[in-house]
Length: 113
Image (cartoon, rainbow, N blue to C red):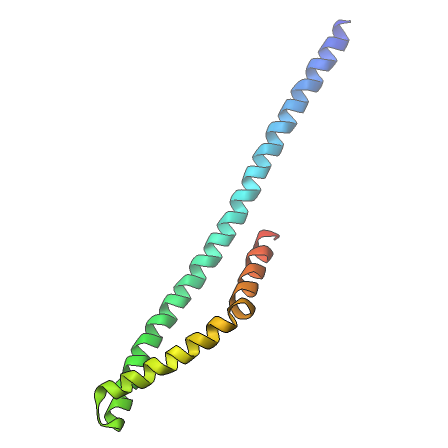
């Protein structure tokens, strides 16, 4: 009878160790997944920040240049603002197709790796 009790105790100890190991493995996998997602998003945000700054400086330069050509500096800023307004409207109309779907696919792809 004692060997049966020892077998059950051994079985329960192994089962408990297996459960703890499984929980630990799940934690490590989720940590890895969130680390990959965070690093991917941070690197993309850094690129977006550099591109945004470059676009801002370029836009100011183009506005000043157009303003000089049109005779009044502020005319150039109006033209550049109109361009960005038109681009914003087009961007808003196709936002789901150009942004939401690729970002969702990126997150899902990174999460399933």
